Length: 135
Image 1 (cartoon, one colour):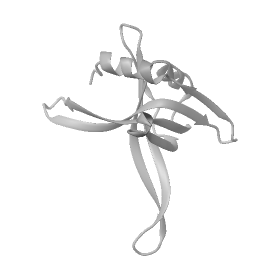
Image 2 (cartoon, helix red, strand yellow; image 1 turned 30 degrees about the vertical axis):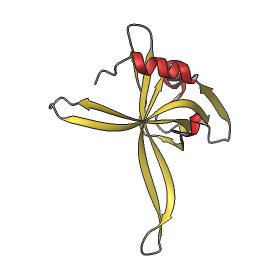
Image 3 (cartoon, helix red, strand yellow; image 1 turned 180 degrees about the vertical axis):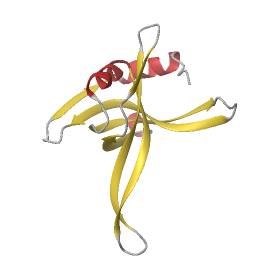
């Protein structure tokens, strides 16, 4: 049940090629944006697309596989947890960003094929606790 406390599942398309950062200790982090698309009815009764953009972060082995296989336009199904991160930008302003920290990723090819990979939850938590994101 503890995994249900903060659980996010998204199915969408990658908006830009992932940015991969490798640290001196060999750990990697992959960051990218992902769009989810839902058809909704507006106040006029018209069906319109509701596109939401999400900030996605993957660590360790998952980041390595993302580096190898994920590019702009890739269709993904991801599972992870919601994380809010605070930082000071280059203008000295404090900002907060919501990110999805990925645990599992499923690459969904347009032909219906699938490739999946994941990191263990403990591996992911260790890397998040011990590495500061440099931006």
